[in-house]
Image 1 (cartoon, rainbow, N blue to C red):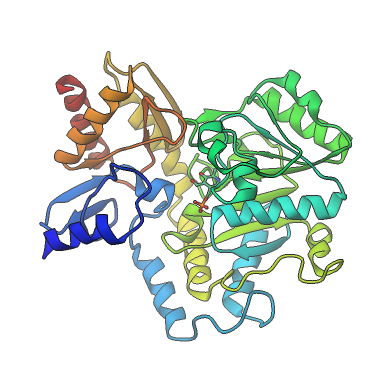
Image 2 (cartoon, rainbow, N blue to C red):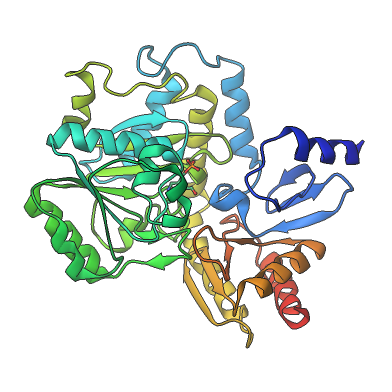
Length: 395
Ligand SMILES: Cc1ncc(COP(=O)(O)O)c(C=O)c1O
């Protein structure tokens, strides 16, 4: 039965690589997942920074169940007044700076960025878009256009015109920002580039240049948001705020949801010239909204931002081995550089065999990521890192 399913997985489901991770999943709870043979794995990846509150947190499950008993999809986004959506938007307003007071709910990260790029063009009446090399903003045409990894893009050209790239953390490059630019999009912490952390002086200058030119600053916190870096949003480390914020991944705690948040006066442009300037059938799905509301509550009540800082430090202190060339870490967003890609492949396999899940990055070939649930136990951190260090010895 199990082998038949595995065969069907390769045969009937579209594959995105020739070597998928291939764990045959049975269930997930807290910081662990189990395969169909009953083998238990410690999850140091959390579905790529999604299960920030852990898999199937009881409060999350209860919120979803409560909503399940009321209604599922009833109407396209924006027409009916659905309390679960309204409460979520209101909760976001309470945890964001006052100017970020209006939320457009979508289904994923790339959709949030698509909406943000469109809104910036519509609001400014400008067409140029600026982004940063090595960034990742999603896989649909608009988001891919502003993503900075050429290897992932060349086969899909032509993409959006008038997109230019700057070097991350290079202040001189910010001179490209002028009055023809609709928006600059940035991951404050570049996730799939292997956790590249923006400098304070760079962020200050970026905000200044956008203010001077009227270009809107879009911060993509799809991976770095929802407590992952030790603050609810990573821009809080800098005291620099976006004009438009995008969220997804950990926002839904395991259900698909994204958000694009801006000032009401900017967001209002989607209502006219043309009306219905952005449309989604499933955006703001009631179950996903219930989950996202619960995620915000859990992050607060269990002080998971503080925990992300403490546990991130613990990981960093334990990850010491001659084969580790560098560690970039902020909260529980961690990249560990090895010598080369084949060493990395062997380590990922070793950890899998020994019940620990670590994973690669999209745009950084010889590094592995650690992005576990923010409420992972310290004992699990110690035992999982022990396996990683053993693996480094063996590989
Ligand atoms: C920073 C960032 N932006 C956008 C996305 C795209 O999100 P999604 O896969 O939900 O479309 C991702 C996904 O990894 C991401 O890390």
